[in-house]
Each structure stands twice: as structure tokens, then as C-alpha cells.
Image (cartoon, rainbow, N blue to C red; front, side, top):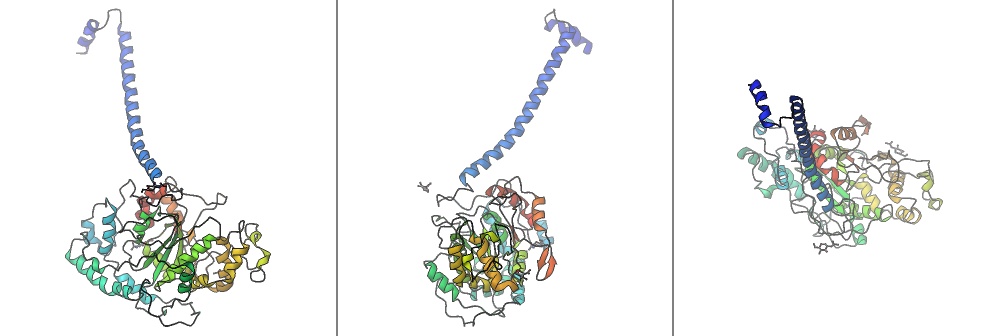
Amino acid sequence: MKKMRFEQLPQFIPSSLNSGRYLHNIITYLFIFGLGLVVGLTLSFYLNDLSFNIKENFEKEKYPVESIMANASIPNPPPPPPPPPPPPILPDRSSASQNTGVPPPPLIPQPQQTQVYNNPHQPNKPVEVAEQTTLPIEKPKLPLQQPKPLPEQMPLPVQHPKQVVEHIPLAIQEQAQQQMPFQEPKPLLNIPPKPPEAMHSMSDEELLHRAATMSHLEKSRIDYVPKVAFMYLSRGDLPLAPLWERFFAGNEGRYSIYVHTQPFYNGNAPPQSVFHNRRIPSKTVEWGKFSMIEAERRLLANALLDVTNQRFVLLSEACIPLYNFSTVYKYLIESTQTFVESYDDPSNVGRGRYNHRMQPHVTLRQWRKGSQWFEVDRELAVDIIRDVLYYNLFKRYCKPDCYSDEHYLPTMLTMKFWYKNANRTLTWVDWSKGGPHPTRFGRYEVNVDLLNHLRTGECLYNGKPTNVCHLFARKFTYLSLSRLLLYSQKALYY
Ligand SMILES: *[C@@H]1O[C@H](CO)[C@@H](O)[C@H](O)[C@H]1NC(C)=O
Ligand SMILES: *[C@@H]1O[C@H](CO)[C@@H](O)[C@H](O)[C@H]1NC(C)=O
Ligand SMILES: *[C@@H]1O[C@H](CO)[C@@H](O)[C@H](O)[C@H]1NC(C)=O
């Protein structure tokens, strides 16, 4: 056969060509073919990558993270990211039966949220917690008044949690027995009722006065579920809202949310979102200025109006939770200490910012520095919004290059509550690169190793060593969201 072909060759090629030239041609063809193959492969990879980039750029333009929200009508929260999110963690109690019918990953946000109501794990939690919740160190600071009838727009403290405790478990258990695990959550009646809108028409003065004179629930009462107030300082929409939605899912009745935005933002999260109607009346906040303290007080005062809020966390729009809700909740509710970072920094960005006119109320020895991102209990929260003396002192004498948000609370709370403050913050941040702003994490910086790294530390909790030191971390940009959603189940356990 081969021979035949060689013999026939001269018929097809000009006779002047010899077999050497023919071989040369074959090699050339082969080379061109190989080149085509390489180009084809490269192109296909490139196109693959391109489609992803196009999408990302598109999203970047549509929801610029850094630009202050110029237009309130920007849709929110941002749509789920390109990679299909892993299905939310399901409680492992009845894992045997559930694993057989693992549901497909949710394609749209709603189903994910609805699954939370089928969570058979949830009902037990409120009861457990309610029984354990006595905060040991707390001393009643003011004569406790009997709860007065509250005005209509205030949250009614006791009834909602009761419903949580008594009604939900039964309903959900029945539902779990009767139905397939992931059907439409019909019995909406048994979900803890949504809290009233956070928006109101009180002025700052009215608000602070009302919050400061708010009655308190007795610590020993077990007929309510204590809540953690998550207070967000944001410009507009929370860029990482989808991650937080995942974090909160299934824990209704154990948290409340308050969002302070720039005043010209008037958007709202969609009705199924936990951030729907959670914006409080807000005023302009400028970085490093005293308006930051005012915004923090506004958040605290709004959160204090709900008497079941027992712990108060300040978060930024660039914060992520490093643990699942149950871990965070237990950590905060059972803590005997508050978490306001406070230390004495002898350098010129510490003591150097002290103004001697603050004497005799604040001396240089009392001057402290610390992160703005705090966590306090009810007693400290009330004290902060009642404070007039230090508030005015800092407003007057701590102006850039003195930053009140780094000195006011650390100094004041250390003077008054040194005995119960852990002096550390729960919010991890990376200052290692220097400059006035901490490191930001985008898409390419986020991986499982980083998240594991953020989750491990060495510190004291209720007087005992622990490796859970930071419950939150910043600064994460919107571009990191897809990665965070990808790893949240694997690395953050929610
Ligand atoms: C905001 O959106 C509205 C329509 O939704 C549009 O008419 C207006 O021009 C936008 N404003 C800015 C500043 O983009
Ligand atoms: C926090 O700092 C204050 C004042 O520096 C100190 O008295 C207190 O013991 C510290 N608390 C802890 C838990 O280290
Ligand atoms: C929460 O996370 C911890 C690990 O940090 C895990 O052991 C626990 O099972 C998780 N709880 C839920 C309800 O997913």
C-alpha cells in the first residue's frame, strides 16, 4: 500500500519535485496543523475566561462598590454571583433521611431563604438559650422601672419570642414529618412575625431620650429570647448582603438588624430579604469625623427600643461573619464581657492625639485608642447614648488628626467599665500594609486558607483561653462576594 502511494505521487506533484521536498511539505502541513490546534485551544480558554470577566465587569459597573450610592434606585441586594452557590448547610440531626434527597442548589435566592423555615434544628434553640441567659456580671445600674405600655411603633417585647418558643417547634416538627423536606413553606403563620419597620419620624433628640429612658427586662426572665442587634454602617445597599442572608437564614427571632445609610439613599431591600425595611433615619456620615459617633449613637438608640436586644454589634458594609449564626449568637449572649478594643498607644497616633483641654475629665493616663467596631451589652449601650459629658468633650477637642471613632468609646468605657471590657475587638482587620486604610480583600485574595487563618487566634473568652477570637472580618469588597459564597459552607460553616 505504502509503496503504491509513493509510486503514484509523481502524478499529483510537479515532476521537478523530489521525495525530499515532499517530506518537507508534510512536515510543514503538520506544523500548520499543530499551530492551528494550539491557537484553537488558547482561544477556547480565552473565551471561557472572557465570558467570566465580562460578567464581572458588567457587575462592577452596575454596582460600583466604592462609589457612594448616587442613586437610590440601584437594585438591591446584588444578584447572586455567577458560580452556583452550594446548598445551604442543613442541620445534620436527621441527616440520614435528608441526605437521600439532597436538593439541587437553589438557582434563585428565594428558595434558599424558604428552606430556613424547614430547619428542624431551629425550634430547640430559642428555648435552650432562653434558659441559659443570665448575664452574670451585669449589675442593674439604674432603678429598674416596671415596663410601661409602649407606644405603637415600638417592638412589643415579650409576645413575639413567646410565639417562637411555643408555636414554631410543633409546627415545624409536624411539617417535617408530613412533608418532603424541601417543599413550599406554606405555614407562614408560624414564622416569627417580621419586626416593625425600623424607620420612624422621631428626631434624634426624641429618639435618644426615648431609648435612654427605656425600661429594661429583668435579667432573670426566661420568657423571652434575647436577641443580638446587628448594626450596619453603610453608604447604601450592603454589597455583601447575600452572604449575610445566608448567615441569618433559619435564625429568625434571635437577631435584629439596623442599617444606617447616607441620607440620600432611599432604596430598600426586596421584601424577602432580612434587610427589608431595616434602614433607620440617617444623616450624613463623614469618614473620621464626629458624625461617625452620631451615627453609632443613632444605631444604638434604635436598637435599644427593642427591649429583647441584649447585645449590640457595630459592623461596616465591608464586614463578613467568620462563623455561623449559632456560634456567633452563643459567643455573644453567653459572654460576661464586652468587646471594645482599648489600649494605650504611646506614639503620636495614640497619645499624640490627646488634647490637654480635656483635663480634668480625661487625663493623658486615661486616654485610650481602639477599633471603631465594637460589641457592647445593654448596660454599655444605654450608657453610651446617655453620655453628655464625654460626648461634648470629644466633639469639641477631638478633631482630625484626632479621630473620635478611635478614641471616644475606648477612653470613656475604659474609665467607667474597665472591669467588664475585654479590651479587644471581635472584628479582624489587616493593618499590616500601613497607611490610613486597612487592606481590602477582593476576589483573588479570598480562599479557604485566608478564611481559616482569620478564624484562628489565641485569646481569652470569659477568662478562659480560646482560639475563637474574631467573629467578623473586614474589609471585603463586592468583588469578593462570589468567592465568599463559594467557600462559606466549606470554610465558614454556614
Ligand atoms: C436615578 O434613577 C432614576 C430612575 O430610576 C433616573 O431618572 C435618575 O436620572 C437617576 N439619577 C441618577 C443620579 O442617576
Ligand atoms: C482592660 O483594660 C483596663 C484598663 O487598662 C484594665 O483595668 C482591665 O483589666 C483590662 N481588661 C482585661 C480583660 O484585660
Ligand atoms: C456552626 O459551625 C460550627 C463550626 O464552627 C459547627 O460545628 C456547627 O455544627 C455549625 N452549626 C450549624 C447549625 O451549622
